[in-house]
Length: 288
Image 1 (cartoon, helix red, strand yellow):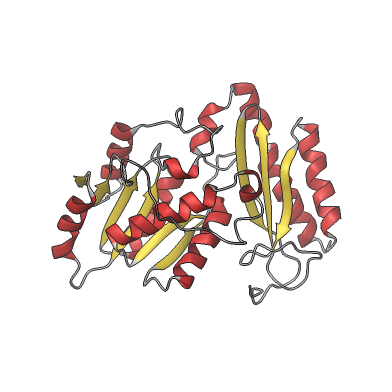
Image 2 (tube, one colour):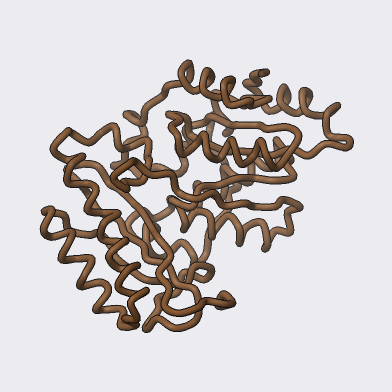
């Protein structure tokens, strides 16, 4: 495994390997866990060369968010990457000029809901850094986790709108034995908070099961989920059922795909999760 710390270095290392080989890219902010390793495993099976970036992107953190305390665990991360068969780590000190970037991207409409509603500018920072990383690595394939579904939907739209020759692959959410989605932020939970946090995934599962039983009323599904959250002392920041592509709110479940989204604070830790919610047989996705 090789490590590059500048864009010029990773470009130089990858250049002689491009002919006849495919490159899969897994962008991360480090603090790797089993969820990240599942992305790497999918990348390993999809391409000849696997590149993982480790970079805590300041542009996607708001002024009152946890940029300074976001865990930096590079030594442990690099060992995990080596064990997982990663070929290259790209670990830059910064990707921006000293006086800050003057040209950035903006995510329209898809960023106005869900996490974007309470984190203005967050997804602008995401698309800007992912665009920079794509320009540097120039992968054939990029892998993103489905736990951050809104991010995945926005990245897919960015690649489509900007006509990037990159295949975006989503990887299923990896969960703890009790169902809690794996997250770098789970380490912030106290033992007591961790016990309550499972209500987040349980609420989604309840919606899923109720829909599978034939319930099509969105409010009924949300009421079921909220009862589980409230029993655990958790109030949702948002709890929505939306089209998985356009992220538009669903008024009623039908034969089209739908996805339930949740964000909630457990103590001081903000958790997000999502699951498909279907009734009957889903066939085609709604268009934007």
